Amino acid sequence: MADNRKRSNKSRGGDSENKHTVVRINRVAKVTKGGRTFSFSTVVVVGDGKGSVGIGLGKSREVTGSIDKGRDDALKNMIKVPVHKGAIPHEQIGKYGAAIVLVRPAAKGTGVIAGGAMRAVLESAGVTDVIAKSLGSPNQQNVVKATLNALSLMRDAKTVARERGITIEKVFNG
Image 1: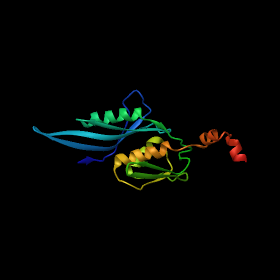
Image 2: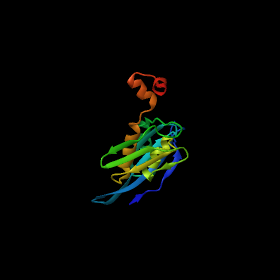
Image 3: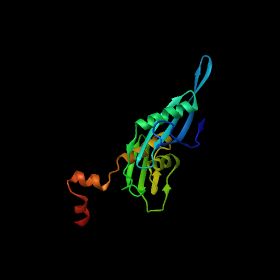
Image 4: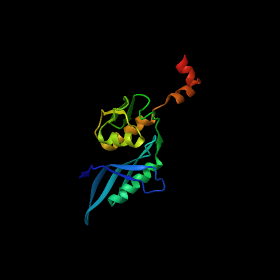
């Protein structure tokens, strides 16, 4: 049985800027000689709303313990996302397992048009205007990882210009 309610709280760790969002809580039952043993696994997204986001998986016998472990794991796996005025710089496809996600920039004021698992990642990263679609597997854990993959492949204009060995002024002025 899965508890898909979203929870968003300020992180209790030393990093007070980061907020964490619980994407999924799954109750797992292990049958032993003595009966059933229940544990919980969670998918947690942590972000500062300014371009840093990470995801983590936590497992524990208690819900709060698994959320804490997931948050700690997410803080270890943070990435930087190029966000410019609330939008992403270009269209990108991300893949993880059978999950495929398409993330497109949108006009200012559009908002976050995305499904639940992708919405948590995009909002935690600080993206405010985006259109996203999950094309493959509906598995929330893989959709979150595919979204993070798409965001990690994003490059801004400064990075591309540096790789090409030119300045941005040269690109826009011809």
